[in-house]
Length: 201
Image 1 (cartoon, rainbow, N blue to C red):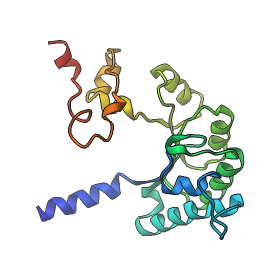
Image 2 (cartoon, rainbow, N blue to C red; image 1 turned 90 degrees about the horizontal axis):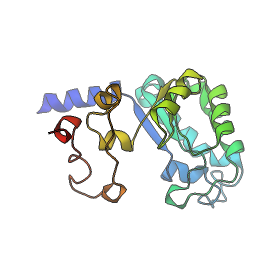
Image 3 (cartoon, helix red, strand yellow; image 1 turned 180 degrees about the vertical axis):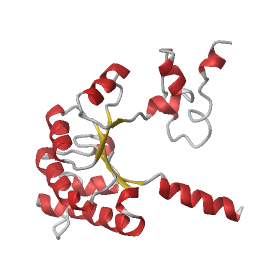
Image 4 (cartoon, rainbow, N blue to C red; image 1 turned 45 degrees about the vertical axis):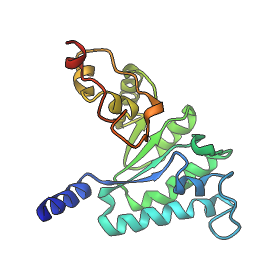
């Protein structure tokens, strides 16, 4: 068991550590103009609101290496009651401050602002991962073909389809994810979606 813990730690670092600066979680709250009501050096002006995200990314990169550190952002995503009125100021400033760290990647959750995502792609120096939530496969492939993303990611589709690569290769129908079961506390909605093979029996 000790060796299993050792291997798990090594694999976790090899797989990279993604800092969650999206979806209304703590780092995103600092970026948001409605959640961040601080009046110190971490609130108010854009340069102050990005400070916490930059410090967190710097600390993680110092600890495990920039090549093992990624950052996820979701500009304009209102999840957890986040409101952002100045995404075109905040996120370019954040990327400019992070660029010297040479992080492994930036993971962008697309919330509908095509101009902003295109600008982030132009200004980010390393790999850009893009999740265009709910988009069909063709739209995601188009993002790759256009150079908007180096990698496209999926979330709910992967959760609901334990055999997602096989389904995509076979152009088979996908299971629909059930949001009512997300974070439910048991296996429901995590390990009970049928595989294509099981569904065809």
